Image (cartoon, rainbow, N blue to C red):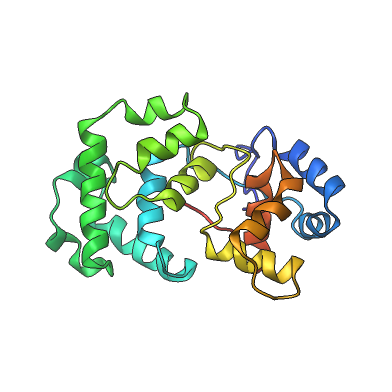
Length: 213
């Protein structure tokens, strides 16, 4: 996302990550050069990121944005306590599947019942965060990884279940041929410890609008 004001700043590691990635991988260097001035912006809010990720599961970025806008009109102001008071019927007109409606209401209840959960995540390792969040119904590893990248700004996350990432890796590194998870992981080893940053730029290479959760 391009910064719109001086108040919006890149993560503190962003410049160092871009320099290291550009030096280690000429393909990544070219992608980064095409998107200078753009960077990941955190919402700083695990709950909101989780809700957006659930909404965006298995649908396009454009469709997810439309559903999210309708969702916010119903769940206003958005908070665990507010979401926990709703029923699946209340969310019927948002464009959400029945299962996603159940997941979102369950998410609200989970966070409302554990008000210190979000704060505790900041001190956990990446894998501990994933373990804690996947206890929530509807939150799998991919969704937890979106939290690590977009809310907690963890620099070295590689979400191998992400279709956009795999598509971009196939496009830029295998001339469009499919790439397997193990192959992608081996290729991405050169990006460590900045795989979140590489992932973000690969997403950006596919879509002029940055991925946002």
